[in-house]
Amino acid sequence: MSTTIPSRPWWRHPAFWVAVFALVTTFAFLGLRGIWDPDEGRYTNVALNMVDSGDWLIPRRSYEVEHWTKPPLTYWAIAASISALGSSALAARLPSAFAHLLCVLLVGRMARRLAPGNGVRASLVYAAMLFPFGAAQMITTDYLLASMEALALWGYVEARFGSARPRAWLVVMWVGFALAFLTKGPPGLLPLLPVVLFELLTRDRERPTLFQPLGLLAFVAIAAPWYIAVTQKTPGLMGYFLGSEVVGRIATDEFKRHGEWYGWIAIYAPTLLIGTLPWSRTLWRWIRGLPARVRAWRGDRALRIAQSPWLLVALWVLVPLAVFCISRSRLPLYILPLWVPIALAITLQSAHDGRALPRWPAMMAWAAVMLALEVAAAHYPTHKDAREWARAIRDRTNEPIEEVLFVEDMARYGVHLHTGPHVQIEKLSIERVTNDARFNPEYDESLDGELAEHEPEQLWICKQEDSAKVFAHVRAAGYEPVVLGTPYQGRVFFRTVAAMRPPAAATPPAR
Image (cartoon, rainbow, N blue to C red):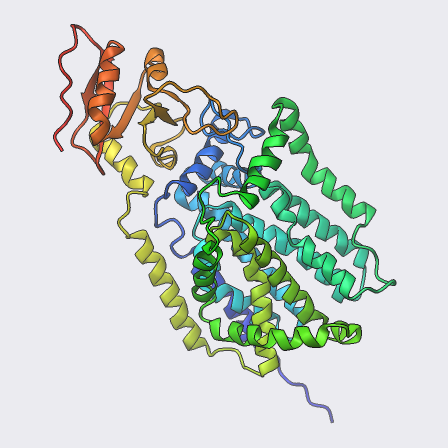
């Protein structure tokens, strides 16, 4: 007589609770914090300009000045979200949140091939790590990049470790790389280096080549049209992309992003140590075992093939990390895509050690810690919060605003989202703007040039210490500054009106 083992109810399956964990930690307080400048504000502002103008081809930081630091996929995703859900911090952050969930899913799918039976564990590992969780609450190109690279490597893992239709999965790989290329340009192809190296180390003539014609055709069809269109409209743009945005960031400290010889230690070591919590100890065990594995792999092709999941994950972590360390432009978010292979490395090590999944009360307590950190960040007092800047503007004027002009100060682009549609944010220079920097100039226009236009419904903002000099320029142009309320964050808010009499001596507001 045979007996049937009853299956567990769906609500008791570990996969269900991993999904709950990921959904709650990702979405619970996604819109609680206002847009933080400069990065969140800049990406959101460009997307809003696409929505306002209807031009989704050319990224613009204002109607007059184009913005070419990144390809358009992130802007398109934010613009689509805002178009569907309205202008809010929640809508602007949704692309990053969904990219996070996609990584959670794809890590689990890859682990099913690389460490059979550990897909749920891998998804939990990724969802619970601090750095990916924190990045999911931010507006950044790096999360869309991480998810598209994960899509590409999922296609490769299925082609290499799956059992059917490897050529079709290699097309998926090239689609992922095409979308990564549309997100951040050539750096989106960085994971292709460890894949090629892995192929060389485990060469098998029976495997289909990576460079499938259909896959390459898909890559070109997806990635190329936007680049062709914008470079035809903007001569010299391709040279800027390759020179300043790729070579400049790798080989020079042009962008002042920790280019010192020790910068890679100062930035990436603490990011890896803290960002992999609560699994840092397991990752350390994986790292400690690497030298012995590398020695064993050297010269032993059969062992490399037998331990190919470990080899692929090791290459996927170490090769891009080496490139990031050599590059002289270093920020924590640059290595966000590495958390996918890091989660796989932790999963492989946990399975090797015979460790069970953490108990759910412990994971719920950790989720509470994660959410508490998110709430604390939302209430952290900072001058970067564009929602507070928008509130300060509303407190000082009830008149319509079409332009917010920052004179010799950081442009608070996030104000665009929090003040309403069609509001332009510009950064002005007191000195004459020569526009020597053809692409992405520091200033949109000069103060005198903007005064000459004297467009209606403008709001001006400058530092208190610069107010005497700024007011002198305003009066010399035949206008009178009208200060609005008290200074905010050391800044003076004012409008300009046509002067009715010879200007008197400038009297800046009291400090």
